[in-house]
Image (cartoon, rainbow, N blue to C red; front, side, top):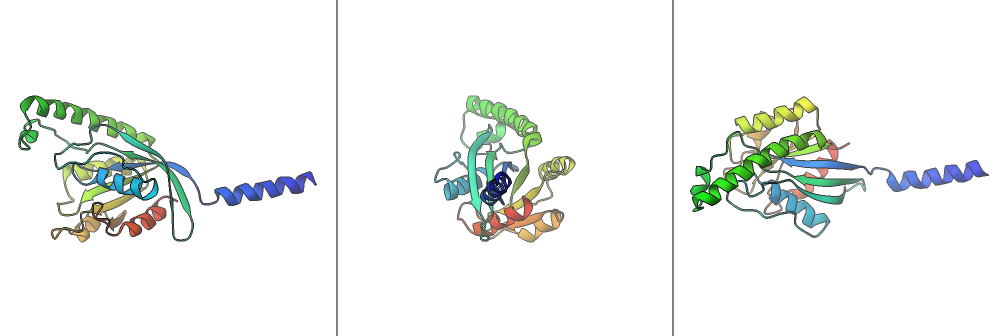
Length: 211
């Protein structure tokens, strides 16, 4: 009798947690690719709240931002539970003079450059804590940049599951095929994080990567 009860309890728990897993899901990519815009889209869709502020000025996100306990569901009823980690844009060089172009004064520009540099270091450190990573790229730009190759190289070395998001497909210069050709070893999905285009396909792609 006790054995029957135990087996019954096991079946109930199995049904409750079947297809569920809790992971750390990181958003990585170069500055202004749309990481925080995508993070906001995901968080709004499943939690009803945003993660952070977005701006046309590079390195708006300069520190790690985490949104906890997001649960998404596939069309088949499968679920993934994760902490979404939005990271600062990865750059090989950050010059304060680049911010002066956006009518920022010299003092603020130097401060932003310093914070952005620190953010890049933190983002790379956090790679060791990731169970899976979404690499967000601007599909209107050349995917074969030093920054993109550095990001992909670091992820490949750590054998972290990756989904590449070719963002900004709403723009005329968008070329998803170039992104696919650049990184054929990974699933690539085109979206417009800002407009919400193809977001459902993005969620389904995430289930194929996070197994």
